[in-house]
Length: 400
Image (cartoon, rainbow, N blue to C red):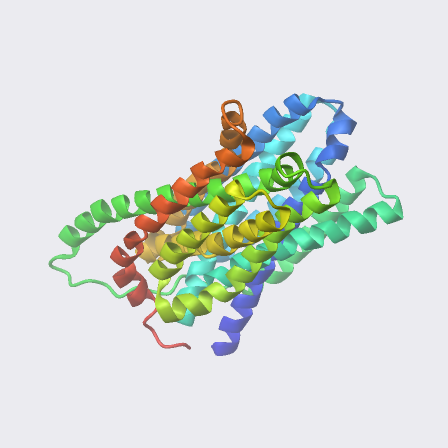
């Protein structure tokens, strides 16, 4: 049984890497697809909204489906569909076909994102200790693999359509190969006594719904901050501080590296100090980091600020997803889909919100909005304490 659990954990890592790689391969080929279809930056921006819309819809569908059919079926099916859909943008010849391709690819990606997180919750329950943050760290590994794929393809002279198709085909094989290692079902939760069961269920649904809404709101704010860093960190160094383009590129790299390192450490910190501490003090550290970034006149100060921002945000989203999944084991997929769906909208909104604010103030001053969001998240971190009894009970069983 212990060997099967370790295998399930490895398989979950595989799907997180797969998801990161598929998205990364698409992202690094966006300029080539734009040229192939012959569209402007403005048109591309509108089409990318469809990618986000598809992902949001996929998350809403896959969560309840995973609860009903089981993550062992939904995760590999989503992985296969997402990998196969990666080839479609490379085959597009017009804005309309690209719109359909991105909507479908986004939908499949959303299905994979939610279902693999729901399965990660089941693995964490079976391990009886926090392991969620490490899964999210390996998503970033997929981005690194995507960069290597793009570099190798460029060296080999392969076209965009061929790279997307070959990467998708490889992804299908990986998704199928890892499927047998997944947990067969969610760990069973102890049933309440028969008499108060109905009343307790109704009260739990009311309280649980409010709890999940708060978690979703916090995920929206945390992922809005992450999305803003993804798109504006390099531009901040280049346009505000006057750094050369090569140096400015390290702004995002510093943020991403700090976030990955933080996620690799967050599980151990959470096991010792609790998930609420991760969210509260991590968000506070992120607030300090982004404030320093907004106010510093020095390039090295900005690098330090972006690093602190990434390190502080690192554990927030995994803790929120974990809390949502453990709130009701029978509805882990649905709850994760609600939190992840609103969080994903925040990720999409972040770059746009900062862009709108630049019409009224300097780019670096817009980052003070992120300071405010991090401060609100730190202040509301007690919501994880409210859900800690459920999470503690979920992690109580001894390791198989």
